[in-house]
Length: 214
Image 1 (cartoon, rainbow, N blue to C red):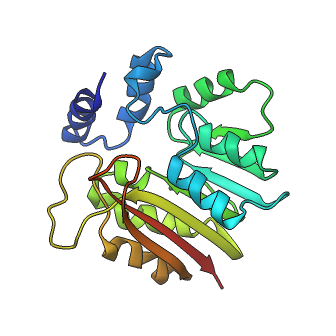
Image 2: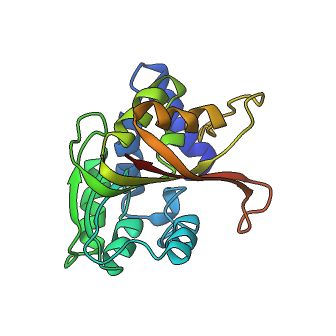
């Protein structure tokens, strides 16, 4: 299944008023075939990797949560750097698959909904999850991500980006700068906001946001 087929699957669920079940349906449909999952690169997100290498993060022992962890590559990479990692995904099938891939992992995987998950972390990692959620859920999702940061904790977000005047497009729906600015309303001060052309996939606009709770 390519990206178009995944969009069609998602659209069918969303048209019926179910904005979330398509994730689990996609992972079940894949039958452990990575090629069916458009975002299953079987490696750490390259823009998260670059940020970690540049910033020297996470620090050993740092408490980290990976939001929408999918098949676990970002979570495993953070754990390999010495972090204490929780990772969750809406899809129980994705969590089962990740646990099978990494049977001896120190990462604590769990199936959970972002809107119900609770925790307090030194580093919150979100890559490519917000952009996969329908626009009407975005403000609430940003608030939920921000709320996972402990006092003094930080959030790193990696996503597709667009100008305010650009149309939202189709799944994955790029974020606009005003979406990123919503983090400030939930107690996060911006450390850095990078707006760049993807060096690995030229022509795709990316945002990388790094914020800290006071």
